[in-house]
Image (tube, rainbow, N blue to C red):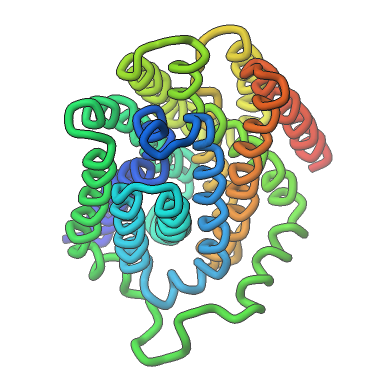
Length: 390
């Protein structure tokens, strides 16, 4: 077998496998937001209180990304993904056990397991992806996010109504655990550059955690990207985690129909990610593409304030991750992805809490969406200015 064909096979296997992993990780990461209308009455909380669960998930994800790149290099990215999926599965089982305290613990465990998965995936893809296909490749992999949301909306409400929300959560955990087992054959293909067993420690030092953050913030391209990533993540967290709740409570839809709405919106988002990734590769101006997407997000978030929920941030992260990989030093994509993901998770951590506060003060979902639109508009303007300065 020629080196060219071998390289192509490694690329295609990685792309398909890591996209599947992204789908399953999204199921685990966001199950609570879809199951909230069914679980909330039994837990004795309001469905909108899912905001607190979501913020705990992202808080744990932020912590787990710190030094995640260094751990990925030491264990190998596939082994790191397996560990993350197993931890996320445990979090799903804890959520299924029921109770407010266990739900809070579940959020922390799920976030701890799911947070580093993007780091490990970027570690693999940066090694095997042809440079000319970088944006579309990362966008294809990230299309697993809206596909995961679509499966959440299509499957979990029905499972919750037929078998109970606890069994629906347990099924997510079982799926994550099986996925961790199924990807074991990928280790010889992609974990070949890991540190030899018995050399060095597993957990990173403070310097290994802080250095990528410092270098990423100093980079004139990555700095505005970190800011826009934070704002887009904030928008995505609100739209995805409040779509079902908003549809049930605000628009008076049935639970199953609300899940179907989320599925329909996010399937469109999957195609959007791929489309914009291809455009970024074609134009060779990924930053400009991100600014254009930002303008679309502003319009969509504004429209959402007055109409039905939609998926506004469908295309950002593939281009964002590819641009991060392009600016990382050789062999350090995992660390730099972890650094930028810290900002992304930060936006997703704070936005549900702020949105919940606005909802409590104004009793209006529309006001929350309008504030999100304003934030993204400011971030897009700053990114556009940085692009012009280059």
